[in-house]
Image (cartoon, rainbow over all chains, first blue to last red; front, top):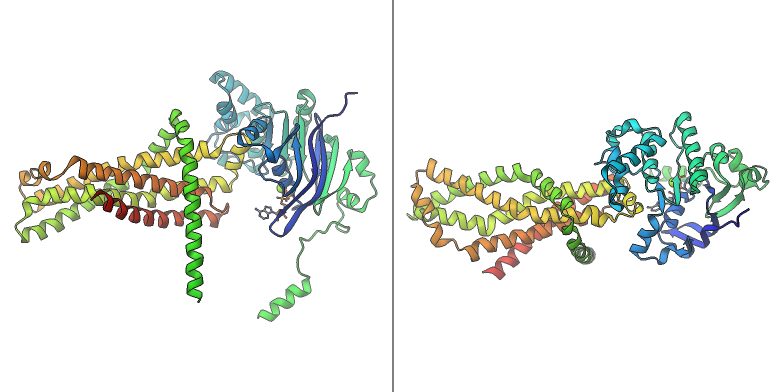
Length: 271
Length: 256
Ligand SMILES: Nc1ncnc2c1ncn2[C@@H]1O[C@H](COP(=O)(O)OP(=O)(O)OP(=O)(O)O)[C@@H](O)[C@H]1O
Ligand SMILES: [Mg+2]
């Protein structure tokens, strides 16, 4: 077996927004050529972590290295060079609303390559075919449903054949058929092209079928990691609660708030 | 005390905004040569911005010209000076009213459209999306829109002036009965190409830079929410109007 290479290495990551500490010492390794899933309750900072890795945000402390380069130290052109090797699927798609579906998917090709129009057309149609939306080429993003928009965004994220791809919640709002299709696509991209995939998801079932490795985030820390099977048998209360979807446990369902009594008493005082 | 504090806070805010607008402007200038090498995006924006404002500018030009014709004719007829009417109207328009009114209308129509468009692109993560595709949104979105406004402003001003002159001619000559020759003949002697016409063009160039800069600046730094975008839109109009009037005074003082 080939020696496992680490593509993304995070050490001692700390990040806060205002007073709120979002990451408090996170260490994380993402192996090349594998599917790594980041899971955690809503609002733990999964999207924030993807933004930190891709250099959209800078950490307060700690280092993030992608392919040997420290992201926060790169200048603009180095960062852009690195990003050309990345695909990023935004949680809401982030399609360009002035462009048709075709032009959206063709956008990175037009900006970064001098390919002839016929070839661009072939590549775009091929990628749209892969997400099952070749029929939408001439539609505007506003005419697509949320799930369709996300699939078009996925086609756009893979159009440059990146080395690594970040999926922010790729399964939310998809019907079971397209969900299965996207799961297969993620697997297929990973297997045939050796793509490194980083998937953020809440969907324990779906993600377990594709991921080689899972990381569980909660309260600014990694609370569990390992292969899906190992995690499912993990006995730590954090992991059990998340993997089995229990309401009770160390992960609070409620966002931190004053106690109910205080909140209600406070209101009475004001009246 | 409160008034003092508020004044202080406001001026601090104004100065920091002004400072960041200047820095932003320098950044835009640094990108400009490359943007002009690929003029497709810029020309498209000149077209969009121009088309948005064209009808408004033409209507406004017509009525401003007609009002000038009417006002000056009745006033000047009292002194028996109506034969200077054409020259006076042209001077007022070319030196002052054309650039200023065009810039104010432009801020209300195209400036707000630019600011809200950019703010919305930010709020819907389209700008972040470009960043992630290694396309610099400043180069792709901001600079072409700034240059589009910058180039469109003198053109719109010229159109405004031409129509306003025709409007005043129509009122003075067709309605009030001034002699056609009396309207046109004093112009060559009294309107100086360098002092008057170029001075006006210079103003509209400055106003174009200010209006374009403030619109893209406010849009680009808008807080990415519905309220943030609407605030950016309002600020665009207010700030541009202020900037245009202040610049107008300074330029007039320098040019005279
Ligand atoms: N612009 C912002 N300003 C202040 N706080 C923010 C901002 N964006 C996010 N946060 C905070 O950062 C935390 C992490 O947000 P993030 O979007 O990364 O969560 P997430 O794990 O992706 O959640 P979800 O699963 O719901 O998408 C949240 O608690 C949120 O309150
Ligand atoms: Mg998220």
